[in-house]
Image (tube, one colour):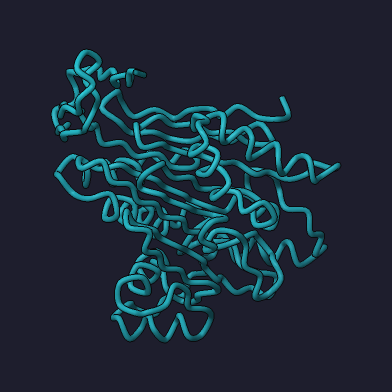
Length: 326
């Protein structure tokens, strides 16, 4: 009779918020099922170095909140930060000078909501959650998404700030479309979290690639591309040139690779390899992060410069990501 291996759980002195749950394992002597305690340590991981966002999400988890609230409130910090020109208010506009936002959110049960080409609303992620919870739909787009947001009480606000407007006006002088890697073509804040109950959720929000064609939508609001969560396995989210992530259904791929036994790190590396294999000229950036049900994390990208931040009982750490191009 095969013996099941027991998960080795290390007790962390800083894990004051950790709880435990009962899981079924096979007793190696009797062969019968027995219940054992497995400690659950909450954790949050996000693309790029966004300490304020991960701190907010961690505070939700630390106070006993669920992972869905944590990821929503975490990325809202970046949406409202005018110094972050990749999401929400202050985001870089399209080539016509309009800021449009995309976002999606996914909970432990596989429920999801998304908004695409949303204008004049700061917190696209919260509108996406309203789509998930208050409608029979998954995705709302453009004017329909904007009207829905107003109906739900979201205020109308001009998202184009002076700094982004001046940069756009300077771009108009040449209209040369070569977005700067890791600056103008990363665009996305993706966040994944596990709460005290061991449940996963994810969120992804962006103002899209700088100076894009009007109406362009990337991977960020597409469930399975920019974000995917399976509460039995783990979650993944992406940043970078969304068109390339869509072509490989990147986040879903990474979760499925973890289902097949890969670690989050191995799965992210394979996700990048799939994109690299289809592109002879790697003049763009794509990065993935992932987390599995056990709280292991990983991240990988094409170009150097991508980092991801993790907040867990072990600390609040910004991790440089390995990259295909050294």
